[in-house]
Image 1 (cartoon, rainbow over the protein chains, first blue to last red):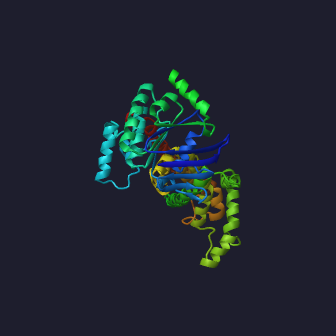
Image 2 (image 1 turned 90 degrees about the vertical axis):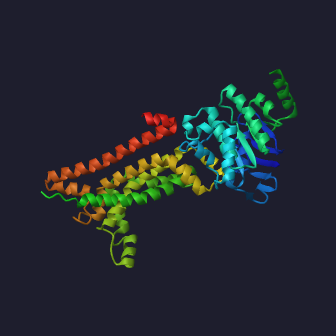
Image 3 (image 1 turned 180 degrees about the horizontal axis):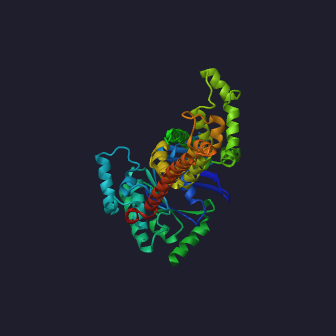
Length: 225
Length: 233
């Protein structure tokens, strides 16, 4: 269980969010620039909130009152970025294995399982520049899951992909979440994607939860789509 | 005519030692300055860049004030080791460092700024230390720019004349570098010797710059377009 309660002053508004995420697919939904990515960065330890508390199970990741801020590398959080962020100078295999400290039988099994599930076994000797967008995103997903994270953050991972590849990867993400049984937090500004993917949807607007009437409006619009 | 290779070897040695120091110092200084803003940053950068825009004799004069017998560093060295720096190869190394450092710093700063910080963030979330992030992500991606800076710095150190002449003089076999040898050979109308030195220094510099440009182009092509284009190119 991830609990988030943070405040952070951004250039245009105050980000103020409080929510909890169980072992499911949670969607952070809202227009561009409403603070979704900042929340993910705060959870991952890449950005520091001004105030608040972030806990993952029993572990305190951030607590302003106790001046605790666990460095990103100790948080055990997987992060998939919108632009894939694959290391361009490493092959697919080296990208996926980057965070693995001990390459043992268990790691080899996880690697083979991920390569097979994501159908990227034939790409392991290629460089990121030789991959399509969908392949890059699969590799990024494999890399994030390879380290055995306690939670996976997905920052608009499908927004740069074609419609068909996008639908395909949406299904794969749902399947992966069910198999890994860890919280997945997906950021999107696509209403249909949010509806399809989210077991829990958090509507955001200017750094805060969107008002109830707006949430109802979103649902009505989605029914018309 | 017996050609004296000593200035060539000395210049290579001085430029090599200077390169070692400016590479480390340039990178260490560029790391915080490329990524962070703080009060006084512009002032620090202006001071670092000064030797690049000032005439080398001015740099030499300032060095002379610092390391000369009456200068603070010169006095200290004399008290500690009972010797002086001026008119020694060590002074020539200091002059080479002073004039080549801004080039290394500027190149290192530009190279570090081109590294996508999201890649470093990904590495952090994958549980690796800052040291590993630097050596496996930042450094390899900044390497083409850093190497260009190293070649420019080495070439600048090889070609340094004004500051070297002021602090190291022209002692054949001890402090006479190629540019100083060219100047004195030409002054004494020994144009063949001067021409040979010019040819050697031009050749060394050309080969390095050409080689690095070619390597950088291939490396960038590989990063941007993948291995297939690299093989075809």
